[in-house]
Length: 119
Image (cartoon, rainbow, N blue to C red; front, top):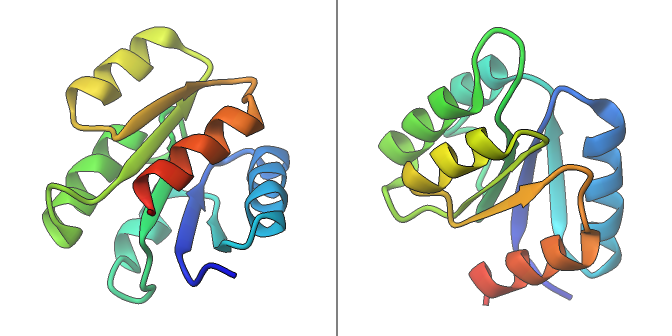
């Protein structure tokens, strides 16, 4: 069983729960947060190995999350961006997303990406 820890950040509860269920089923330890402000305030409170984040959220968007995570955890920290908007995903890729996935999510492809970055 993997000891790798993944934070899932999305303001849609069903999306967070679905991702968590799939990743825990293959052995990852997962945490959830529903807003970027909480994540940014608690970056050093959780030891995580990878972040999966939505881009469009209330209060702060995924791009602000990218900036805070990269500043706190390092520019090479793996972030997987998810969104239903292709333009936002391209912007996330430009900002250094390790992978991008379009909603609705293909869970097999998402798990493949996670495995690639946590090997």
